[in-house]
Image (tube, rainbow, N blue to C red; front, side):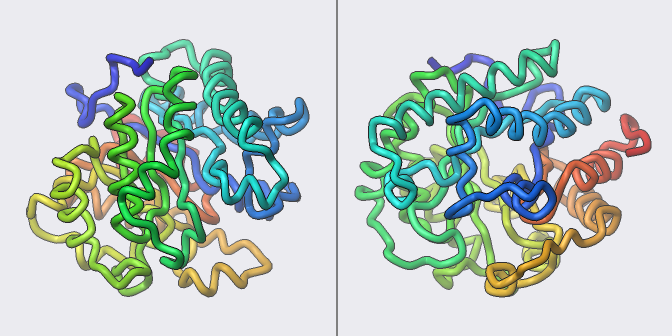
Length: 319
């Protein structure tokens, strides 16, 4: 069942870190083969689980050392039926893997942190299709039915929350939010944008957030932006409009390249961790309600430590 300690924004203004670019780190820095860019098959072996824990450990240590919270994601961004079928994973095995992802995350939390209240287990729901293209779109009703089993698996295994990550059109986000509400799970929606600050569907971020709230009755606990560099959305996050206040998390890319360029990249663009951290600091000075700070493609623990030190200077120390 869901935890009664989930609340955003935290009443004590606690900052929560996340990890960085799981798949890009494993592929480009660790040399791990991830067919279909899927990390969840690593849960099927002891060696794979060890690789995942070794990846997450520095991020959790950073949060513990700096006395901030941490949102521990399950490695399940691709763990839905369409991607599983491409990897020859049966529906029954997929349900088991999604549940095991939560149990695995809980074990990692308990080994690496002695403050369970500061580490939330987050069941990650990714897009049915390509996160960079708004093709083969579903209706909200279809999306709810499609993603409900994964959300149910997270609930049954004891996750604290679920997050819809790298959403590029509204109907899928609405469907996941409704599935979470029906199953009694707190849910976060994270949209991604192109270099012009608009989603792949062509819709503005403002419209996407406002429409998702309107069509769900404000179900999402908060919104995030992920898989885009701050230069892609900085200029649209000005003012104090309600839709901007709903954005409480950032998980930016290290690279300022477009999604199309990243898709074709054969080498990792890790950008400049200190420059990225300064951009986060500038955004947080304008948006003081930002509580969740992490990374996406190309970022590793160096980026997250720099971001934390820039945004929470009273607690920062050398990375």
